[in-house]
Image (cartoon, rainbow, N blue to C red; front, side):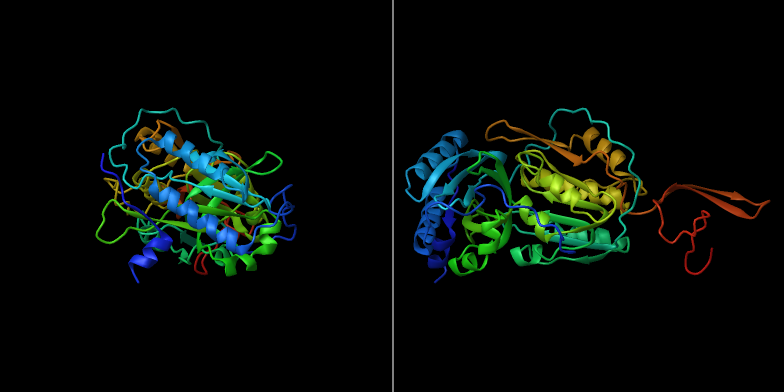
Length: 417
């Protein structure tokens, strides 16, 4: 196997010479304060050293390289502990309690792994509501090493009348997420251990580490809302198997609970490795919806780029009925379907399971909670029947509860009942 060229962010520079929540989540014990302070210089030096160690590993023997990385971290005095974490990541904890996640867990080319064995779909309760908000926010935190799904998803949503924004997935922009009917983020994900033994799951953001930004985020650090996160990000020109290794800030469930809010009956799609593993990040997203419960979509463990891309296109396209899925087009075109039927179709097509070629770990795609009121992203007409005698048109389908109804079953559209 050809050894990939991995270049740290520092080395690449040389080569190139919401509604805010009214009840913020309480900080976890040892979430990011106390203990022995770590200076900016020590933090910067340790992050540089971790990036260089990551880049020096071949990642041909995945388990051996993760073990070597843990041993490297355990040998550095600025860390009080280190180990293997959720989402097949490695973690370290600074002596001041701040968590550091290192992950090489999202294969950029997994095209040989497109048809794993069929799985049985779990029962999902019949949520049938549409999002109350027509706003959609699509955020991509990953660089050119990975597929940017947001342009295709944006076209799908706009075709059904959603007002779509695609802001940068920075810490500051994530802190302003509020009231969307659809929220989607594509990112790295991984876990680490706090001092009390609980796991903290982190989602990588597009905000790259520097000491000035780090100091400005101290209130979030003190409340356990952030992690440091090292992973692959961008291609290196002229080296097709290469990737930059960068350290960014990541957000935790405490960040979601304090800063982020979603619209009633929202679809919240966390397209990151391990979003359904470890701590209750997904539950925090669902309960951060205003009014009716939102539903969270995501993967249980490590998932490759191609598999994750195909699932995102498939799920959003079928929920909308736009018939714009570039990977798995419908023939003939189909109407929108509820997420329960979309999920069953995903499973039947063997698109809801991923086996990591590096270590054989298995990830499943899913929706949670099963009691969500969310059903689909666009009204769906199953059939029409004309009653000529009574001069009525009977329409059967899935439409959710329209807030414009006058309580008698009559809905006014364009001024006409």
